[in-house]
Amino acid sequence: LHLLISLIHHHYYLIQGLISAVKAELPNAEHRRCVKHIVDNLKKKHKNKDFLKPMVWNLAWAYNKTQYKAELQNLKDYNMSLYDDVMKKEPKTWSLAYYRLGSLSEDVDNNATESFNATILAARAKAIVPMLETIRRQAMVRIAKRNKKSERRAEKFTKYVVKMLESEKEDAEKCITTPCTH
Image 1 (tube, one colour):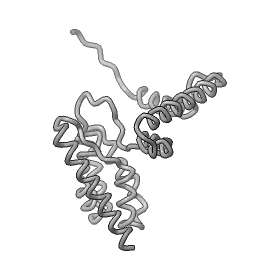
Image 2: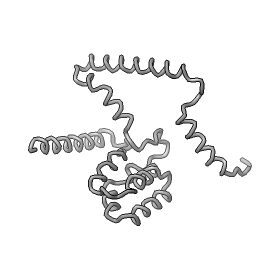
Image 3: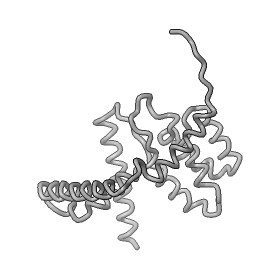
Image 4: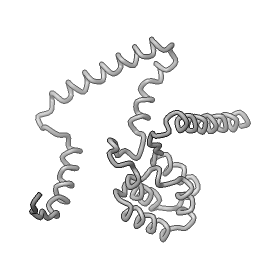
């Protein structure tokens, strides 16, 4: 148990050191936090809060400051203790409403990174050049498999994308265009 606690503390300080180093070396970089990890950590303390997950994700997905404030108020109205704990996680660092203008990614989680890390576990134990060569080969195999899979599809888009586009179309149909001059 002592060893486990020691490892957890070591991991925490390693992460904190990494965050500090990135801020020092890349002061203009946008620093974001993963909402999935925030939700998972909040669930440990707030086990019986059925709406914890959707409320936190709604806060993360708020596209503007007005929507962000409304979602924050919903959270506050739902449970003050949960609200206080969410505020400790600095939601402005993981809400779309506060992402820099011109940001090329609207991800509020790091699923892509987690997925990549999971696929390179064996390669990470190798020296740098063999590690990179192993990752390159894995990427080539993955690309080839996806290419074969895509060639078997008759449709242009996946079912997931079609569903998403249909939802977006419903929203777009509610919009009104107003002509103007220059």
